[in-house]
Length: 374
Image 1 (cartoon, one colour):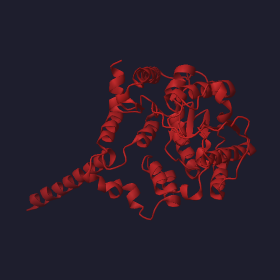
Image 2 (image 1 turned 30 degrees about the horizontal axis):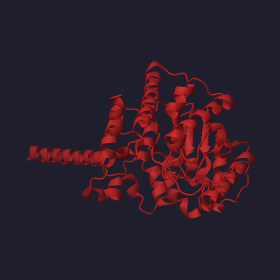
Image 3 (image 1 turned 90 degrees about the horizontal axis):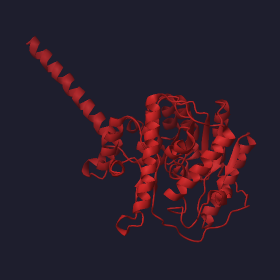
Image 4 (image 1 turned 120 degrees about the horizontal axis):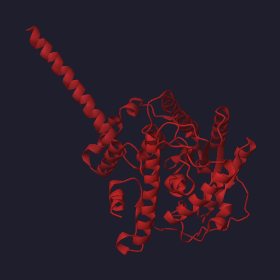
C-alpha cells in the first residue's frame, strides 16, 4: 500500500511537471504573439552583456530606418534597436532601465516619434503587451504592469490566459519556426532590422527644409517626456535625440513633425542634442519618391542612406569607433555584416519582379535560406 501511494505521488509530480513544461513550451513557442517585435526584443537579450556600444530606442521608425549590421560594416561599432511599433514615450523610462540592466552603451539614441502621440495612445494594452510580453521578469517589468497593465495581472505572467484563442488557428506557425531558429542559434543575424522593397506612398511630400516650427505636446506625453529625461539624468546616460526622415504629405504628418521639434526642444532644455534629420535629406540623398515604403517608414534604399549618414555623424560627434570584441563576438558581427550585404544584393536583383514585389528584410527562416544560397 505504501509503495502504491509513493508511485501515485511520483506520478502526480511527474504529470504536474509535464504539464508545466508543456505549458511553458506552448507559451514561448506558440501561444503568444511571435512577430518581429518578439524576435527583436528577444534578440536584444541574447546579445552578450556590455557588448553594445549604442542602443537605439524608439518605434517602427527605428528598425525600418537604421541597420545595426550595416553600421558595423561601415564604421565598426556595435548597436541594436530596442524598438517596436508605436512605442510610446510613456514606456521609455522602463525601457531605458531594461537597456542599462543588460548593457553599458556609450550612447543611447532616441527617435522622438513616440512622444508625439495623444494621451489615449500612451497606455494602450497593445503597447504595454508589446513590451511586457517580451522582457524578462524583474521589478522593472512589474512596475510597468502596475502602472499601465489591465486588472488581470495573472494574464501577464501566464500568457496562455491571454492568447488561448490561438488554439484554433495556425497563423502564428511561421513565427514559431522563426523563434525556434533564433533560440537554437543563440544570437541574431540581422540585428533586429526590418525593411521592405515595396513603395506605397500617398500625396505630395512637403518640403520641410528650414522649417523648425514646433507644436505643443499632449500634456500627458510632455509629462512622460520630462520623466524620461529625468531618468536619463539620474543614470548619467549619454543620449542623442533624433527625428528620422519621414515623408510628410498631410496635416496629420506635419503636426507630428511639429511635435517632434517640441520633444527635441524639451531634450535640448535638459542639455541633450536634438538632431532633426528632416533637415539633412539633401546631404543623405533621400528621395521622397523612392526611399520610403509608406509615408512613415523608409524602405531598404532609404535605410542604407540613413544608416550611412547617422553612423558617420555618431562616429564624428560622439566618438564611437571600432568595437573591442572577442573572437566569437567579432565572427558573429562579421556574419551580420555579410548577411546584410547579401540582402541588399538580393533586394537589388529581385525588387523589379512583378511576382515578388514585396521583399521583406527581417529575421526569418525563409529570408536567411535565400541569403544562404548567394
